[in-house]
Image 1 (cartoon, rainbow, N blue to C red):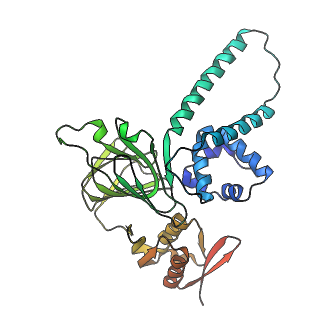
Image 2 (cartoon, rainbow, N blue to C red; image 1 turned 180 degrees about the horizontal axis):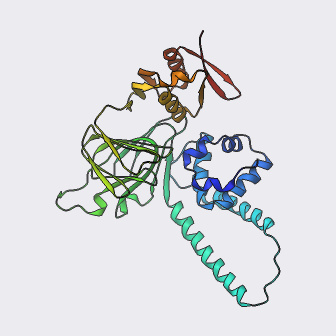
Image 3 (cartoon, one colour; image 1 turned 135 degrees about the horizontal axis):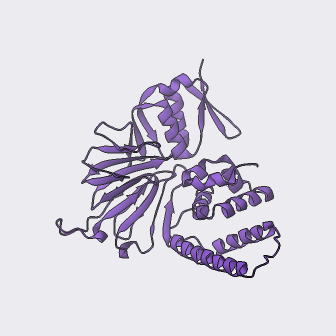
Length: 343
């Protein structure tokens, strides 16, 4: 399993969920894989909580509105530290004593940072959904979030007491934000509601209803009612109902549109309306919703555009609809799925 361990430093939660080696380790662990992933965490300690969240989702464990159990985390860190200790090469003692003091100071600084980082991150409440699963989350301020499949939100456990209401989101979600501002001419920090979608895009609101989608470096914000401010780097856009703002993986600018989206989520019906949606986009939707990767025998069908409806809580039905509208059959082998033309 010779892979670049450092590449995981830039992985998002969804990257881990799509990594076949990671999923194999979670579902079919062995001594070699355990050793490898301990090395991954030791090399990328900042990814520890993200990896733990990904493990929960892969195992389809019910996500709870609580912190990760501290004892379990301490046990894993102890294993990692033992692993690192066995790998530390022997070095000759320095000739000058002040090197020892400098090293001790660095260790203390590192330990202080680790304790700060640990407490900072374990203060977050994390909620996630699995394959084909949606969840309704009531936040401490009575705002409500509807999570689509394979999606997640995080927020501080002292959410209602903080100076600003902040949520970190990945995947697909619908936000119904409670309006607590009483004087429109005087907006206090605690009355703002902020959603961080990725490293680039932030949504600021007072009280409104909007959809978000944030996957693989691309983010979309769709305003249903009220108003939202979408921020990316130095640009800010104030959306009106019916408008959407999109940020691509390599884009520095937000794109605003009033056109109907190609994928329209009907949250209450647990369906997605297809509006001249390409087969390529539908395949991505199925991957995001059910965690399976579909390949096609004839790539020309990827550009075909389709109108229709797909369920987001019934994998078999969704695959049956896809094969029916594309005139294909589905072949499965060793966890791989192929759409093959019917001749």
